[in-house]
Image (tube, rainbow, N blue to C red):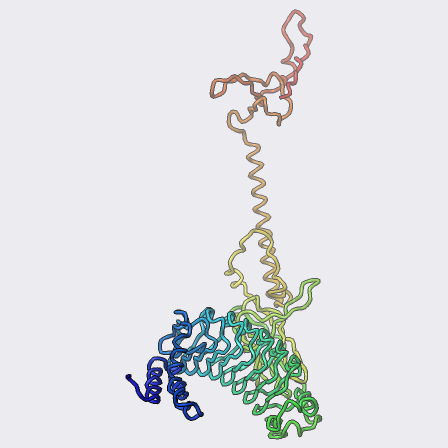
Length: 549
């Protein structure tokens, strides 16, 4: 025999397993070494390796598709390990039956739509420490069985609505260590069974009131180490199953907007916070800095409603000029200043607010500022910019508004250089949605009225000339045959036999036509006296027989 000692035979078979089957080799080797130590007879221990080998060889062979594995990745069972390989995209060739996929510590910057579609059996997906900047809606549409998704340590700046659509079974979502600045309404609407949401170590400054809507099963929410200054009660209302809440290490602004949070933490919220998580420290106002919110009395959490000042309240500008108007606001917390153009309502329509045209800022642009000073910038002013504007300042204590009127002057030269109207007719007044005619200056109104009157006079003169030409054409004698009318034409009334003439058509057919140029009777009655023996007795004019044709 090739092997005489049972231990040598077992070691040889274990070595063979290590070379042929890297996964099962170590397991068999441990079993072979431990069998004699467990009280097994030497004869049974010597035959155990052969028995294990035969058992493994008798296992049904795997289908060819199940053994495929992306290059440089490691695949075993239903797990694929592709971490720390310097990948820039999700590698192709991942087996469709994969349940756990490791893609961490790579340089993947984008998940193309459909790249994960074949992996419908995924239960866990680890994409932490990559370079993802955005998540397109529908990226995870095929991952209806996914339970855990790790996106920690990427470069996500925002989450679009529908980014997590399709993840109806997701339980844990890691979004920590990104660059998120705000969470918009209904961001997590498609995650009804989510239990843990990790958002720590971002730059989140704003949570909209419905940002967490749909998370009725959420048990843990971590918002620590962000830039939150305030949070509304409406934001946490959808979290009916919340058990752990972490809000520490944020620059909290302890004013009237956090009054509810202080009262809630002292009562119902205590069960959600550990002793460490209860240290919610105020960053401002200065008199409350470094104090715990739990130690601040409700009467100290105050707000000062905003006040607004715009000077001047009315400005007259010329066409083509640039305009800059400042709106000063004060209050605590520092008010958010916004400029709006107020649309003039039509009859029966409610008043609406629209952003100014031509570079006028809207919310979040030049018209909104955290410093309390909002600037209205208008470049290359046109008639559409004329009208009423409104500067609004708002904070947790309330809102204040101040109206501003812009008038636009138009010179005679500018009006003449204006392009002519496309259609002839009275020029319509500017619509209320684009500008108010009454908002123009008196000189501009006069010029526009004069131009409209001049245009109407021109149209009237043109109409008069056209009427005169038509009359002249009717009086002028027509060409030969113009008065001829075919007998089968009944549009010109009755005729007489004196007006009938026999003509031949172009093909030689005989036809009778009516010549209206011939008179029905003699023009002079004296010429109608017939010669005869009875001279002097005027004869009656011949009777005219009508022919209806």
